[in-house]
Image: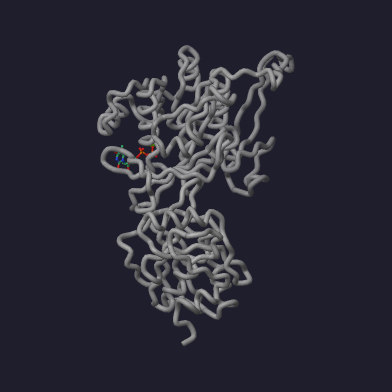
Length: 456
Ligand code: TYD
Ligand code: MG
C-alpha cells in the first residue's frame, strides 16, 4: 500500500518539519512553512542491491586517449567552457543561477546552438517561452540554422520520457522553477517541486550520460529558495551576474566538482546576444590612463587570468551624524578594516566623512591583494592627489599596517605591461627583470608618505 505522509517544508531554507509553525524552527523566517504530501512507493523497504564496481577495473565510456578521464564536451563558447573547467563533463548536472533578465536564456541558447553545430545532440527545453518565441530569439541572434531540438514543456514526466527515448549529449532546462512533477502535491516553483524535479534530472544525467544544464532564477529578496536547494545536488553551480546599467555580464563558478571555482567568463550583451570578451582588462579600466584623484588600477587575478580593473573612491563631507560607508563590487567588512588600519597605523583619519568605494565595470574584487589599491584610492580621494600615471597597484594589507606579498606577481606585472602601464606600486615581487618598474613597499605608512602630501 502506498503510504502518505504530510510534512511541512520551509519555502525559505528547505527545512522539513512534521508540524506547522508560524516561524520556521530551522531558519527563523516567518510564514514560510507550507504543507506538502509525500508518498513512499508500494512495496516499502524491499529494494534491489546497489551495484558496486571495483575502482581499478572501471572503464569510462568516453575515454581521453592519454588519461582515463571522461572527455569534456567543448561547446565552443570559450568563456563558458573555461568556467566549466574546460568544457562540460558528460553526465554532469550544472545549475546556472542569476537574477531574472540577466541573460541566462540568451547565454544557454548560444551554448546550445554552438554545441549543436559541433555535432553534439542538444535539446533546449523551455518552460517560459513558446517554441516560436525561442525561434524568434535565435533568429535575432543569427542562430536560427542551428540543429537544436526545441520544446516548450513544463511536465517533468513528459520531459523525462522524451529524454529517455532519444539520447542527448546536452539538455538545457529553462528554468527549473517552471517544471512540475505529478508525484508531488505542491505548487509549481515550490521548494519540494524544484527539489524533486532537479533530483530526477540529476539522476537522468548520471544514468544516461546526458549533461543537464538547469537555469535557476534567484531574486534579491530570496523569494524562491529553490536554486539554493538545487546547489547541493548538482556538480557545478555557475552564477551569472551583471550590474544594472552595464552591458557586461560575468559568469562565475561558485561550485565545481570537476574544476576550479575561481574562473570567470566575461560577456557583453548586445543586439545580437552575448559577445565573448576574451581580454576583460580593457573593459574594466575606464577610458585612457589619465586618472583623477580617488582612482587606482588594481592588477588582479580572476581564476587563471590576470585582470586589470579600476577602483574608484570618493570621500565627501557627511550630512548626517553617522557617516556613510558604501561599496559596490567590494566587501564592506574589508573597507572597514582598511579604514581602521589607515587611521591607527598611518594616521590618516576619515572621521565624519562619507566614504564610497566602487569597482568599475560591475566586477567584484574578492582578493585580499586588492587591499593596497583600495587604501591608496581612498587616500588619493581624501587628499585630492592623483596617483602616478600609468601605474597599477597590488598588495595585501595586514592589521599591523604591513604590505604583504601576494601570489602571481609576475602575471600581474605582465598584464600591466601588455596594457601599456609602465610601473607598479606593490608589495615586493621576487622576480628578475620585471616587465614594468616596481615601486615596492612593505609598509602602508611608507607608501602613503612617498605618494601623498599627508600631514603637511
Ligand atoms: P534573458 O536571456 O531572457 O534573461 P534571463 O533568461 O536571465 O531572464 O535576457 C533578457 C535581457 O537581455 C532582456 O532585457 C533583453 C536583453 N537582450 C539583449 O539585450 N540582446 C539580445 O540579443 C537578447 C536576446 C536579449
Ligand atoms: Mg529566461
